[in-house]
View 1 (tube, helix red, strand yellow):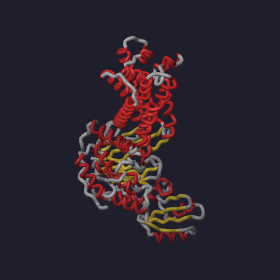
View 2 (view 1 turned 45 degrees about the vertical axis):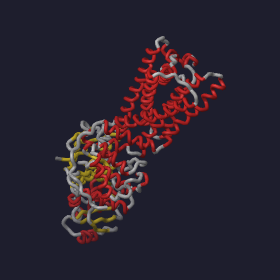
View 3 (view 1 turned 90 degrees about the vertical axis):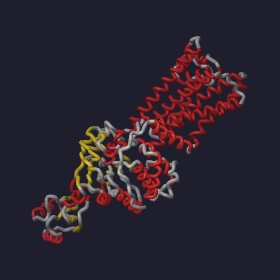
Length: 312
Length: 277
């Protein structure tokens, strides 16, 4: 059974802002699924609709088989959320924050107590758990929020931009923690991020979302494979459109080559970068040339004309 | 940190409402207990009235001890709105920098969040009213209360507190910031107090204000409390103009009860709607 089913889901906010425009996707039980896109793409709105804090304008969504609109309590019972912003009772201890979650999600007190001890040890909160949450650092708080979400053993875990605003060391630590969730049986994880490395590292599949629409969906490796094993990138001094046309005419660039500003990107499917660069030189095109492996940013760039990194 | 093992997620039974309500009320109480201003500040003004202003008024106006008990009960009419409005601040704190979003994703009816806050507002208000009355008695103020009279007093105080907390919850969910909330508190918590017969009978007001005062729930609440603790039905008579005090008390209790019911229902509706975008 799919853990998440989303069909033609849309959200238009008062004032006419269309944040999500009829998206469809399904997530299998046990899968780690990423919603990848820049700020304002509609990721958090999608998570909000799935967690019943935002009312869909149209379409439907089911969590663990429960329709979020007609059976919201059952849908919420099956899920937990780690929010993008701090969402803790700062004056209460970390343990109390976790206990409250356990009680509201109907976890037996003795089971919750054991679970809290286990999670505190696992997530490196052992020495902090009885301190007020307001005294935690950003990374500690985020680990506390992940622990809290796991107290109820959710069937679906939502992680909304879990590493945003954290320094690189804490972010790396946290990615390790989230990566370890992959080893946990049958828990489905929906992760939103605008960090490409997070999506590539953590997700079984990603949906790239742009202006409220899903523009690509698949396993990261499959999406990357569409751009070949390697690509050549060149910055053109002259007219980019003319250069691209010349490259296509000579068979150096395929239909999937794309231009953004003065930068041309040529996916290479069946020729080496050395050959491609030589052909470019033969055409007399001038500018900086480099070859590299494709990233999800290139996938996004080809589909939208914007760089994820720049848009985020 | 190390990699953890986790058991297979299981489908848990739906929680019964009493458990979550108790959890939410306990949480709110713990948060309140860590914010002493919510406990202490609303108490300062009424105690000042009981200890300083009422005796001073008696001396200046040459009134008797009966006026002190009149004013002591009148100060309950200030204490309840102030306390409930301060309790409403917690709703904004929860929304802006607390765990409200987490609670909104909990598998419980969202109205329980309002009711959990209400339970604590009621408990703290009861404590503060108890302190106020104890201070008044210790100051030598006399009440003539029977068991039935205490019932009228408690019923009126309880229902008025419920209604006022509903108003606070609605306001807290309507305004985005604490500053805006606080700016509205005098109009809601203090202005009616001057018109509702807290310090003098409403018959002393100009005729149009007298009529306006009859529609204030606080006027009914104070008249009921005085009827209960002083055996004084004059406040009820000023509202209803009848001769049977029990009938008038029942009518005023119905008014305050309707106020409580209406504001509580409205507050749950406003919270549930404003919590979901």
